[in-house]
Image (cartoon, rainbow, N blue to C red; front, top):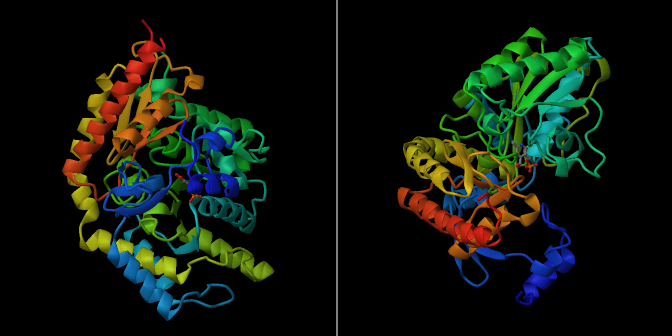
Length: 462
Ligand SMILES: Cc1ncc(COP(=O)(O)O)c(C=O)c1O
């Protein structure tokens, strides 16, 4: 292994890098990036990489949007900071809330701003608890999430997340958070079960869980339209209709986590429209500002807003909010981002390229290393398998997914491997047709090289 450069050594000695194996990282060091342009980012040696993950599923407009830079600079010169506490407000936050209400897929009363998807989902949970206290049902507090869900890493959000690495030795999940089954047909369907039967069974399991816990103790259900970090899991077509029926039956509030799927990723502006359900409240972040500035939002219905008023009449101040809630620079950048989406028809244009993206993705289902290719819109994943026909996973200890990512990197492509040897792909929404081809050409070569290695190592079924 090459010795670490000065910058790599300084990174190793100064930073705790998120989502990194802290032990092996001391040997490997980081890949250090310096600049970006379009859908490409460049490392400190000047090598270019097609950013096949839009950073962390977020840089929808790519890496050199001057208008966003200008929006930030203009706002910084005018009012670099302003808050929304104690009856203060400012134009960028007001305008952003208005825009979000305008484009929302359901009737939204108000928007609460925060800085990250985790904060948004933490806030969702607190707001549901607060609302149910206001409504005089103090026992209705449990939140149901799903196995393999990803809702963030703060204590409540990490509890909602349904992935082992976010719980083990963090002493999570906290009480009153429950997890129901993951709608991944390929992995969890029973022999002979159709997709519709699988969806029916999962809805029945949700109902059983609610009944076992007591419907008067279950407050909310939270879901991403397509699960992202859990493996880009597209549920069966009838899944949400059946799940929503159960939620409605037991008066369970539905929280829609649109942190990845919002702003056109699946085709429509919001993922819930792609999957055909109507949530009660919505979390947004990431592409809200094309990730140029940190900002997230919780979009709440009138019913919840009225509950806040009831509580304020009872106890006074609504005791929730962050210093940077609705930060004017972040809000100004987000307003500009939404304006660009609409003015330049970014989502409509991306929609015309989604069939090409999906076709190239699905073609990789035939690759000997790939068990399942799945996706929707401009997001996808490849689940690697040791035995394609038997759907047998690879030994996670052999790091086959990491090999693919490493070979892709050598090819000049960033993709990510997530739990269970799944390779995820989520490029900026501005990606051009030729760049989609480049992405999949590079990924195919990375898979081929990994296949050669896996065969040598006898990791595949004979
Ligand atoms: C669906 C979803 N919700 C919440 C989060 C957490 O967002 P953040 O990392 O900004 O806290 C993420 C992050 O990837 C996400 O994908």
